[in-house]
Image (tube, rainbow, N blue to C red):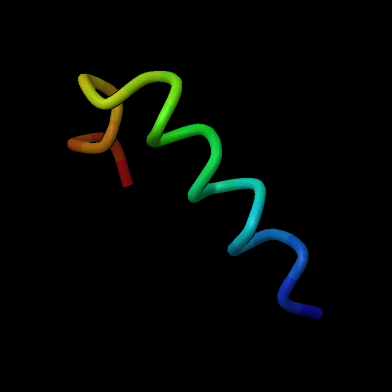
Length: 22
């Protein structure tokens, strides 16, 4: 259930510029 939060966190780490896009 929280797997998406982990994936999102990893994504933000890889693409910090994309963090603006929620």
